Image (cartoon, rainbow, N blue to C red; front, top):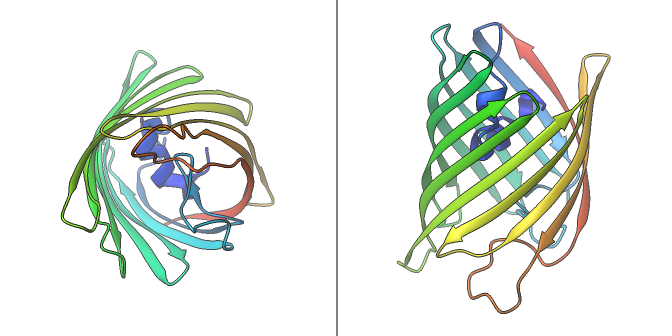
Length: 215
């Protein structure tokens, strides 16, 4: 997966499968045709492209810390995360925390991220509490399973606890002339009978381009 998609890697548990062989400081910048995350259109009904970027530090020990920003219609999202990721006998594992914050919207929340990976398979489990902006706290879990092969990947993600929704994502990424390109088809399963869906009701295809820098 592309380094600029650190948010998606951590939140889905894929950080366990993406421990960099070279520790140190890195940065990234990119753009997505429409910002989707975990089966949900973050920009709202396809309201346009999003600019993204972040800075990360990874220590030789496996400790990582970073921040990631994305533009939204009339708002800016900024995430802060930290954790530990390593590998033993081919088994990758990670544990971390992520905070999702917004400059305008009252929708900030934090979660714990756990991840395992082996070969082309990655499993993520995330637990958090979300403030819906009206003073109500919503407990949720998010579990994802991803299989990757030579740039192609498929992810199944499902919410639990007090939140409903599931989705499939099929994508392909490649690097050309130092730029990372990704295309993904996102197929949410929006249950109309559920009371608290966190996935969108329509399918989409997203395109993204990004560039990473090591210091």
